[in-house]
Length: 201
Image 1 (cartoon, rainbow, N blue to C red):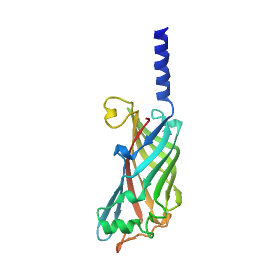
Image 2: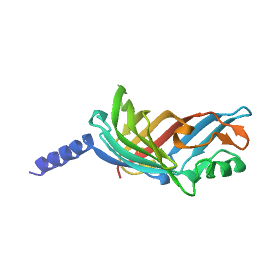
Image 3: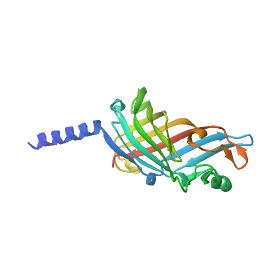
Image 4: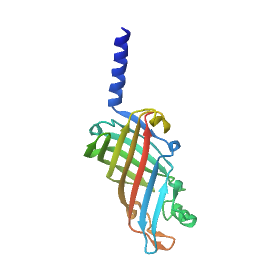
């Protein structure tokens, strides 16, 4: 009887691990970051933001089942390396962090599976990006890696882990942002990359 119960307990845990699981993206891991790039006539601008949190529900071993989630970036965590430029970036002409303190991405599904290699799935996510209160559908090419909880993963945080990385491009005008920054005309298109770590704990 004890052996049978042990087998049933193991199988129930295995089934749960294979199904949809909720993953939390916490700032405390120190692993979440976005990087954006823009060109100006005077210089190229690279910025980063690490005030990222959120939650996602998915089956990390079968993304064809879909994904639902919400990632939130604190606008005031975005830095470009120059204080004056950062202040302008937070102003009402640009991201207006006082009125719109968060940028969000709502993932609503998987548009396409591009490849599966080992524990990594490359796919195109569908969802809406909201900046300055304006929402636009933005497809995001992402790679999602799954790591079951182990002694090694617990060095980062408890629970099963997923790593999500990817890139996409936005147009400033789509979100009502002026493309002038401290006297320099910034490119209309902004390239964005991201790296996130989520835990099932």
